[in-house]
Amino acid sequence: MKLTSVELVRASLPLASPFRTSFGTQTVRQVLLVHVTTPESEGWAECVALEDPLYSSEYVDGAAHVLRHHLVPRLAAAQGLTAARVATVLHPVKGHRMAKAGLETAVLDAELRAAGTSFSTHLGGVRDRVPAGVSVGIMDSVPQLLDAVDGYLAEGYVRIKLKIEPGWDYEPVRAVRERFGDILLQTDANTAYTLKDWKLLQRLDAFDLLFHEQPMDEEDVRGHAELAKLLATPICLDESIVSARAAADAIALGACAVVNIKPGRVGGYLEARRIHDVCVANGIPVWCGGMLETGVGRAANAALAALPGFTLPGDVSASSRYYAQDLTAPFVLDDGHLTVPTGPGTGVEVLPDVLASLATSTERLL
Ligand code: OSB
Ligand code: MG
Image (tube, rainbow, N blue to C red; front, top):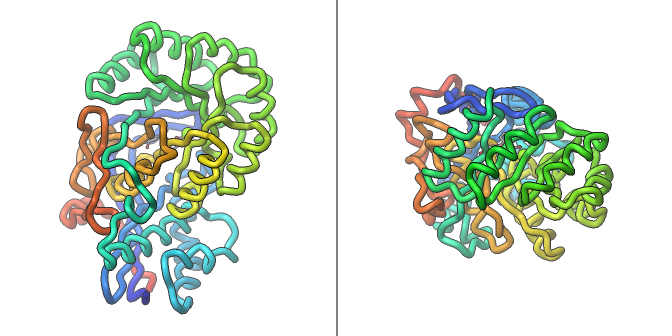
């Protein structure tokens, strides 16, 4: 395959409601799309880096910079390019997995569109629809949280994830469990705790949660193994799992019983599939995380979530949970599920008029 052009398209999408986590409040998603063309087809991908380096070290201006100055030039110079070779070509550049994932996914989309194959088929999907969970942000009050959860359950979401932080944990979790009974419920702390908080987290064992997601620092894998011994509630890792090797190590240490797979965080869908395989081989359930993606990223995430090891509902919510106007035809909930696209590549099309109205810049790199 030969790349004939690579473009970065930036767009600014207001979120349907503010999304507060322990690392800050998102009100607008600064979206970075990677658009490639080849003589046969074109490909689109969404780089999931957020505006600020608060979830991980990557951020959207940094991702655009490393794509422009380091990643795209290397890919443009490569001979005999295939999507499967992208990671090897980019390997000399350390880190920057979200930027690498954006580029690899755009190339993979182009390749699969030319071959007439869907992401789901290529990755090994076994389901035509995937259960949808929803990630519920920190709120100003418990009644406000209960209203939000009530609304999501009424829409059909099959699992609720509550963002927590010190000071917003026991009461909101207790209130949601008491009010809504036997729902699938889990937390996500985005690294807001330390091992010193173990007693506080142990009190949450009373609420029969599926797991706590990433209670402690990204690099504190051994700490998570210690915490796991102190809690009845399983630990799931998000930020710490940056590769299949990191997943294998965390599992071997006993740091997690569940893994959140986000393709952007790990360098792309091909590495995401390897993490899936490592987890399946170790009997570790996985689920597909989210980064407030538009339909462009959501389509590929739905395909990944169709793999057999994805036995827990993902943060693959309907478009309306994020955006009044998505960049693709909206993903809608059908009986608590999203339909896995079946068309070539991601199976979705960027709506040109919508993108034109929300785009803030377009930069041609090749
Ligand atoms: O930690 O899972 C996370 C959003 C942005 C950054 C990190 C996280 C999240 C979410 C929302 O929890 C997931 C989604 O619905 O896209
Ligand atoms: Mg998380």
